[in-house]
Each structure stands twice: as structure tokens, then as C-alpha cells.
Image 1: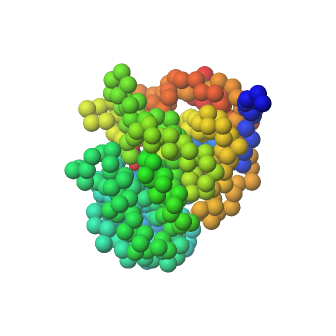
Image 2: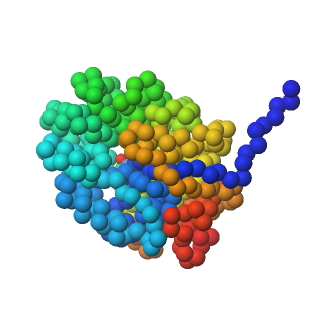
Length: 368
Ligand code: DOR
Ligand code: ZN
């Protein structure tokens, strides 16, 4: 039999995806980055690590209003808000926020583990009553799964977190629904795949695209620095297998995390990769490379709503096989942000007629 390669289609049509993990920031940065997410995704789980963090129902309502006010004309996009857990989070306030539909989930940052996590949880015992309440009401816990201990090798922090914190927690509270965010290791893939129906994981586009060598290719690459940091090639390949497997434990979460240029290209560069302008297109490339385009919809549009118990989106979006030039930068001067794969040509482009807010001719999306 001749080895006939399946033909790659020129158009991908899928139920509109959602981004189950994104940083939209606030003020000028919010206005700058939101259109990229809102054009492509119907909903997004918005991270609460603002300064100060979103820790109360009122703060979340105010943030939601600012996001809605920053949406471009004609956009149809629903931000899903989360509560930032601290050592002193009040279980009753959190549960009220969930019941009232303000907090879709709560986010656990181990204190010191990542950007704006200083007010995160330093003592897991102190939030046990909060986690018990969440388990009782079915409110998902979203976890930044890294130990903050500087003694632990940075490339081992996810695996050590799973062993020391996550696994004991799941044994204590088996009812708690948990999303292990932005997983980066083969070990995390296995742990989640074998973990039953109350655990899931998001996978970013950048962790599918690069391994840790990319951070040092030809010199230090601050725009590829994020937390959890990219791991070994075997880990990247495990993430690719998980994302493209159709296993509903794994779904799309870009972790797009913009920082102004000056804060990335600095002696102490901030952690975070800004992927919003190209993440969906990069996921499409990855699924194409893995011969799994028929499973992109499960990853991007079906498995997330299923875990969160939300309806899938009824509208659709189209990607076309045409070169797409990722903008060199978004914004001007000191507010400029450099996107992941800036200036590179990708193989799939959003069909703007199916975008939720067709970009104006002068926008960075169409200016190329
Ligand atoms: O790289 C990261 N950036 N990881 C995080 O967990 C936070 C994020 C940010 O807010 O910049
Ligand atoms: Zn994040």
C-alpha cells in the first residue's frame, strides 16, 4: 500500500473556542491587549493577579465592568472572573461570589511563586476551610502548580508541587475540582490523565511550541521567560500528545501574560509571555503538525466547558490556511508589548469575517 498522507484542509471551522486562562491586566494594558483575545474567544477565565489582586466580590464586579468597557465596538465576549486566594480569604465571601455568578473559580498562587503572587497563600493549612467550602459547593480551584521554595531547582518546582502539595490536598479533599494550570511536564500530564474526573489541566501554546533551549538560543531571550518555565523536549512532546489526544482532561488556556517591553528587557525581566495575538493560530499549527486537526475543537471548544459545567458556544470561527504575520509589537513607546513569535509568519490566519469584532484596517491585526 502506498503511504498516503491525509490531505490537510485549507479551512478549519470550529465552535468558537474559549481561553480558560488569560491575563488581561488593567487600564492602558487592558485596552491594548483585550481585542486580541475578544476577537477569537467567546469567553475567558481572567486571572485575578492585578495590583492589588481581586480578592472580593466588589473588586471582581468593578474589574468586570472595566473589561466590558474596554471591549472594542461590536465585540461579543464574556469575561469569567476569579478570586485571588490569600491566607485570609473568607469562605463565606467566596461562596457568595460563586453563588451570585461573579466568581467562576478561585485561583491559588503559592506566595512568591510567580508574578504578583506576594499576597498569595503561604500557609496551605490556613485556607483549608475555604477549600472545604469550595469542595462542598463545587467551585473549581485553579492552581499555579509550583512550589515557591528557592531551594528547589526551578525546573523541578512543578513536579515537587504535585508531590508535596497537590497530591496530599486531593487525598484530603477528593471532592474538590481542580485545574492544574499551564502544565509543563510529562509528570504533570501523567498525573492529570490518571487523576479521574475532578482534575483537569490547561496547556499553553508556548509550552507546546518551545522547550527550555529556546530561552538561551543565541543569547538570553527574555520574551520567552514565563513561569512555570519551559522544560525539556520530552516534556514538550508529552504536552503535545496530551493536547492533541482528545482526552477531556486537557484544554486550552493561553496564559497570555503581557508585560511592557521595559519590564521584560531588564536586569530582572518579568515572567510572562504575551501570546494573545497568535495563540489560537499556533495551536492550529501544532495540531496540524501532530496530524490531529480533527481534535482541535475538543481541546479548544469542548473540553473546557465540559469541566466547568458551562454550555459550549453556539457561534463558530474559521481559520484559513494563509500566511499570518505576527505583529512586531503591540502598542507604542513605553507601553509596547512584544508578542510571542513577533515578526514571524504562521500558517493559519483568523478569518476576520468570523471574528467577534472584525478589526479595523488600521489595527495591528490587519496592518501587516
Ligand atoms: O509567566 C507568568 N506570568 N506566569 C504566571 O504565573 C503569571 C504571569 C503574569 O501574571 O505575568
Ligand atoms: Zn497565568
